[in-house]
Length: 365
Ligand code: AMP
Image (tube, rainbow, N blue to C red):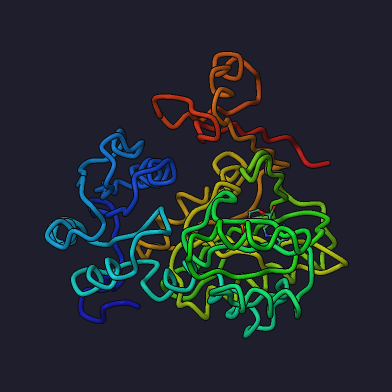
């Protein structure tokens, strides 16, 4: 929207603006680095003193996400707020929204935080998902198993990531253990999908509704943690279109502004929505060198109300995560022609901790 008096874009924040980021992990770090390319300084709000994003931001607030005095001070210090971590309490976003634009907003976050809501939304938009049912206790779990069958996966509806809060149920003998693993939290039972591949669509929606998707990415996990992403995924065009269309429909329904990721299972010539991430995504890291605009630059453009960039790929891309000790080989990777090394500045390489990644871009056949 253009202001008729001044000609300026309303709700747009260009060079000299301050972008607030909720969350201080590597995603926030890479958003802040991209924002700096546009002369936009970042203020990171995170509870952990050793947050990787603090190394590269102009200002920081170290406080709990529910600390309203700290949130008010943060809102007063920035022009627009985004997030890099989807488990920020929705109430904190609602509080911030009374003071400053928040993109994506509380509505999108509320849906993406809840596996039942995100799968219900996908279904309501005509996308496919695994069969699922809400589970609160043994009786509802038994009813769900009777309808969905086994094997199945029981997951907490909220706060799950990298396979945490999940239990596979192969046979009746696993039911009590799986339920105990939910620790009394609301859960969702999903049919186990013997998928052929896992893919994700990383896309941006601007404040003007403009939508741009990157090439569909194929993802391989080790121990529930993303190991490798390859783009473009080797998929029939019809499936690519179905996944991108579902992502566009989800982004539109959520009034989404920013980059989002939708993860899908590919099975029997179809795509099933598994999860919506309301943020830049690990499986989109290849875009830093592999696309004309990286997902981080695209996110900054979207949330700051600037024109989206081209999402066109620059070749065939591979991204490899460096998890735990794998980052100790950084010197070898640094010396490798064609490898682009990204380290997150985290201190100790604990098992399962994402320490960095590399991307490799080759010409397309
Ligand atoms: P999520 O936290 O839902 O992304 O799940 C993490 C990983 O667990 C996925 O990337 C899959 O590899 C696997 N997974 C999750 N749900 C299912 C399912 N319903 N069927 C088969 N595998 C699943």
